Image 1 (cartoon, rainbow, N blue to C red):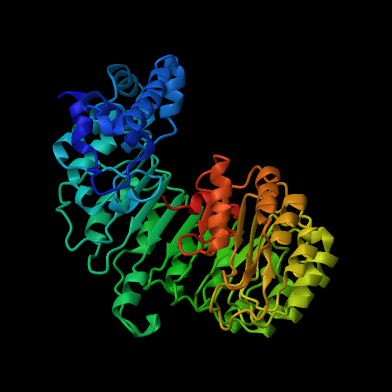
Image 2 (image 1 turned 135 degrees about the vertical axis):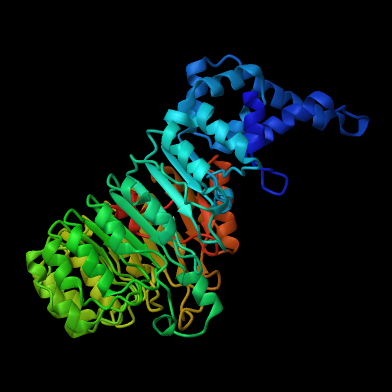
Length: 559
């Protein structure tokens, strides 16, 4: 079969999607060859066509190796568009199979910059695996309709270098017949499984257990978000079925060093005990939104998994007595997230008294994290090695205690690379002007108070001087989020000058998030005039987090 036709058949229809830049260029070239310029649009259309034509002609002088380098940065969907430009591009893309290292086939990936493909015909897709992707393919995600015996067999036979596989069962109402499944990719380093609410996967998993020995990172995504939309009962009170056997996966994957169980409603301490009994190489365990986990298994977990350094417990049900029962002083714990937990002040004081020094600490929405706890950490030197700190929306933490941390303990503030401190209406711009002077190595900074968080700010915030402080003292800044709403933000007539300073001096800035309003529009126009598009964003569409400072961030990333 003609390879160009093969790619066309597996391409996604783009009629109701915003076309990519390359897709738009291809379309304009085709339109330019066939359309006529009428008298009413002569000057404008002629100039536009000439500019487009000159750009395309300039590409003809690029050597093959430069074109291939450009192709390596674009999505599979755009690669397919490029095969229709000319015979030379088609030959280059066809000849260099390593351009097809990553394939995104789930519909959720069609938004943003990933560029998902839609498979229209299974036989054409199987042919593409054998002739196009084969040994170059290292990552693929499969929606439920493509999780079949034929596809998995072709991946196992044709793609020996496949290391990252995502199996999305989340929308499944029934499974394919896997009774004949005898081949599965056996060199995987990372496996991600998205669970279904109604489908039990044991019949499928029984066929692939023997191929999981090489896996080092396991992601299992539950159905907590879907359940919250369909029921008003508390997560602990609902009947959740164990749709996948965690214990058997652990038995057949002894080399796991990162486990991420996100929103899996049936996970409780018995499953953590099972993980602890067989995963002696475990270094990172993420249990975010596993609400049935109370912490009773942590003592066994930390005793057996001696290499565990990262523990993420956001929105879990951990209790005071189980947290303090562990001998944390004998562990290597250095990264901890206890966001939205109900730990008390007394429990946190007892825990931090014996816990090792932390390099990453996240405690937003943790009412037990008070001035006394923070001062205890400072006086004991527990934060001397801290690189990332999230203390947002801690209602019992006083602004003066945080100001003391950032301005008096300069050995800590000088080292911090990521800081999130939001949700406090008493903070003024002077607080941040004083504090930013000591954040010389900051890369991620999240400040302000989102609209209607408990109560609205009673004073206006002059944002210009905050930007000037960032421009002067934070040369490494990559992400900045200011959450104050337009009614709270105040800026002068020459605010564009301060935005210029931030843009020019913070050359690594890749994300500047603001609440939607006049100031956002001005900042966005300023960056776009300097050809820095997609830098300024709104808080309604984006949220900045410090999680990229986790040591296991690359392993924990999903898609």
